[in-house]
Length: 175
Image (cartoon, rainbow, N blue to C red; front, side, top):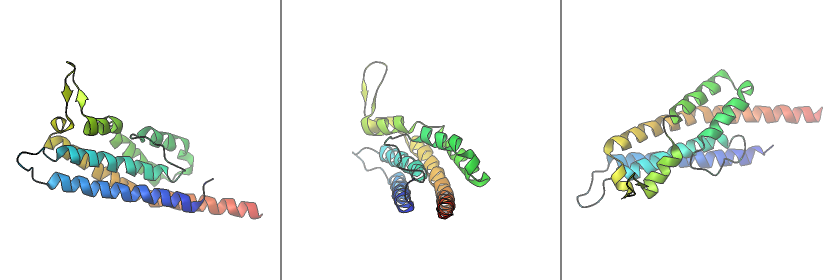
């Protein structure tokens, strides 16, 4: 079992990262395109992806070190399935809502597209700035806002559950 301080620090790191990336995504979305430069939509999508990634990792960090991946969604699903009996109805509902939202998007693909672009069916390279429109950015931003909001609601509940389990374990050792 991890010590409470390490878990809280890791979760807090990812919580703060999620909030900062979300703030950056909002800033990029509100930025007016500058003539002669790429529009800010790619940067908005990239930051929204990172906000969602860190939000999930903050939750996973309550159970131990989060995985080193750009799409921790399947790990969230595993956590939800493995620990359902230990979760309150509220925690379970929040995590299931987050899982449902994240099922709409592949975070790893979004990360790769926003950083490296893609190659179409004709073998032509498409730059990341050519992939994303204002509508893409708006959708990613809304999704990230919702995912980060859910993280903010569920994270204290998970940390509280973890500390109460640790207290019961310590009490059992003393008997």
